[in-house]
Figure 1 (cartoon, rainbow, N blue to C red):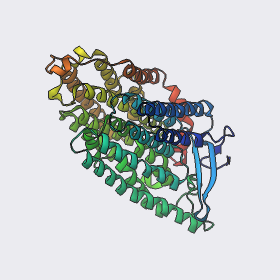
Figure 2 (spheres, rainbow, N blue to C red):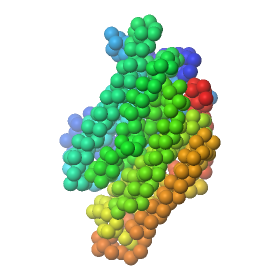
Figure 3 (tube, helix red, strand yellow):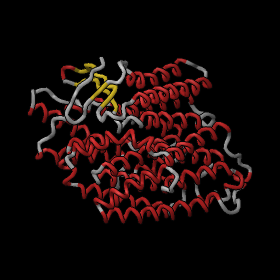
Figure 4 (cartoon, rainbow, N blue to C red):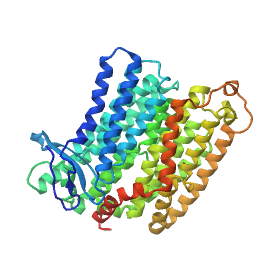
Length: 506
């Protein structure tokens, strides 16, 4: 049943009378089921590609029909799920979440195409797990019930664990998989505890029914004395996944030991940062503003720590993992500004991660498949035999540095301007972090792609094939288009971002 509800902080509106978000969530498990039924290994990748393409087309349909003038939730679906506990199946999207849907689908299509011929062990299982992971990820972005959100949140752990175990490239991949799973389960404890406390608080203060409906929680603010506890529980829970320093140690391990596809997903989809924007700040706004200094401090610490550690790395994967930690810190700094500019910049940067960070790890997967290594000592002169791969890597790197003309420039400019206005010291420190970012990227690029060819494997390596070129070129086009025409994104996020800031009373 589609239901439209008028609320104070987050109004909802169903633009079309069709459960399109449920269709988006169910098309991928259906494709996974079809793969399970077929015994033809070669058909598995085609079914996976069709399923992911279907999710992209549905997502684009949602974006096209999205009403940019409506700051509330749209395409809302509500269905009784566990009535005894007052837990409903509620999904919907707003200007904050809507663009994550097509970008997530696009990233998974890129991963499927990039893995087309490189996955030789149990390809059917590989593509099934990818589709289930995409389902859970999309579910996180559309959930408007805290228990439903938590369910999708935890469901991401299962496919990631097995993808690392069976298709990881490092000798310690089992350790990395177990470490990631245990860390995320530890992070899930305060998250679930926070959601349960919210439900019981509203039951005590209201009708006596537990409240897991996100929209109801928004429109019935917590008492000031309870906000600090909820804020720190949710902050801790999401900090593990973001990752925020010092809870980031699982990311370098995944980058080194896991397959390129998982590294692309982990760096391209910052679900923890999304959780901070969606839940932590709006549900405990007074506490968030009281501890703005903590958020800004965590952000700038991550920016500088990640940049300094990236400079010292001798492996491309590890360098990019610490670079990701640095860029997440910039997003946290944008959130801490509690301004429309800051939140739009943070969202823009999160969208960029999907394109830039995800894309650059896909390229690293291509490079590793050809050379067998991403260690600097084994590389050098890659541009001479693989000029296309080297050129695209450079473009993605420039986007990560925020060079004008790329999507990274828009996001970083918005965040820095808002940070300089609200946390001047942190904003200046972030500028230092950007200089360090240029230092580590240009240095490692020169050592990897330029200079003489030192490895016989590189001298005979083939450049990007047609399928690989298609994936890379598609992401590169988005980097340029969003860099030149940023209003494509900003117009969609503006209404929800303004409402987000207004709801904080800032």
